[in-house]
Amino acid sequence: MGSFFTSTQIYNPNLLDREQFINFFCEEMKKNGYVTSNSDESEVSYILRFSDECKWVTLASEAYEQGNQLSQSDTGRIAKMLKTVCINTTVIDSDCATLDLYDKSGKRKDSLIMGRADDYFGDDIPEPIESVWSPLLEKGYSWRQLLDVQNGDYVFVEEGLSEIAPIIGIAKNNIVFTAEDAKENDNSTVILDFKIARPAIIMSRAGKEIKPPKSITLNAAFKQIIGKALEPFGFKVIKGRHPYIVRVINNEILHIITFRTESPDYSEGDKALAIMGGIATVYRKKITLDQSPIQNYIWFNYMFDFYEALTDERDANILGQLFKSCYHSDKPESLISAMNIGTENLIKYVLPVMDKINDIDSSLDYMRKFKKPCNYVQCTKICTYYPDEDEAFLYFLSKYWQNEQPDFLSKFSNDADFHEWVTVEIEKRKTENQKILKALDLIKM
Image 1 (spheres, one colour):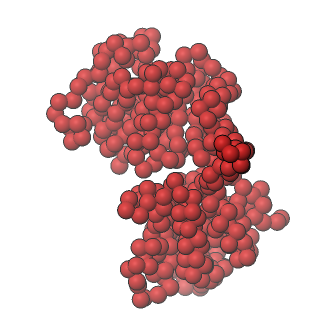
Image 2 (cartoon, helix red, strand yellow):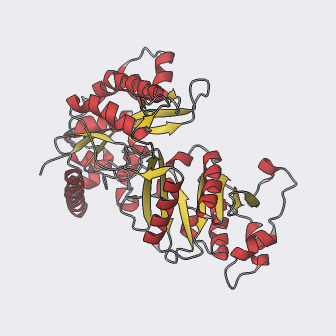
Image 3 (cartoon, one colour):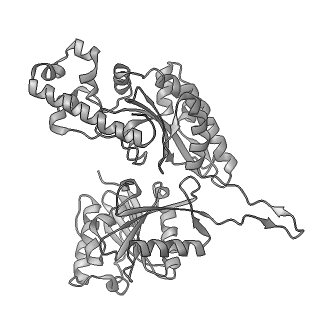
């Protein structure tokens, strides 16, 4: 199955290098009323990805994940702001994508549609306008080649995007880049956070001070409200841009709280979030708290999953509330209320489950009950598949499962070479992951 995403390609005709482009972008944002900020204060956040030649710079945002309307308006605004051409790339189905070109005025000049698009645009799909796209063609490529790629037959439209990218000078990897692909240690990307530049003091006509309206971002509200409330329970807000609140048990088991955005019920607000919880251990391949909750989705469960683990008497109203919280983005008090309710539900329904997960066997019980990637199949194939997200090594550490001696552990017991490999791998994972936790100031070593 293909992915669904939207991003913006910014034409960099003067070949500004990475630092020059960042400075230019930030200066233009400042002229438009936004100043750089830290992630907690951020009201607008962009991820820029550079290629070696920097002829095009890719822009993505976590705010684009629910659709492309914001991305399209941003593309036009950025084209006008930077006085350059921008292309909004949107994959709307596994076999359909659009490339919308915006000129220096910020207006959409033309669209190039790829794949099987009749379900979305009908039978009368216009051809791209040669005079609009030809100036972007790289040396050695023709207009006919671009059309041939556009009209190609692809299982996943990302294949076509990767073929059309070099024709107009975009790096193949960049045209399919999304916010979820960004990693903090990737030298080709930079994350820029901005907040609205509000005057410190505003005076009324009568000469009285008027305080500017208060605002709070989703990340900041999560960290400040829920993070503070969970401190007495041993949790800590980790350093970094991603929203994780973590406590570590015995230097090996992680209890993690985070959130992800959801589609809102517009009768209740224009934004929504789902607060989630999860368990991880130092025996997985890597503790990736430098990645977004979406990238780490396999770790987490919704709060209603914890609620269902606590009781057989399921209340539909409670389940709905635990799935997601809607709020009005223009009303800070609405977001704060959603976070406060989320805090109450976390303490009431999630922490009682997490409190019982304090050793290897209870971690395994959780993995099995919550259908996490720790099961017989993966364990028997661990040498072959070596999955990044597995917790299957817990079976080798469990006294209960070793005493039970099921078939899938027989190789561990009877094959000396495999036993040694597992033992070395367990220690390696533990050492490397504990270094990560120490760097995050979550454990002392």
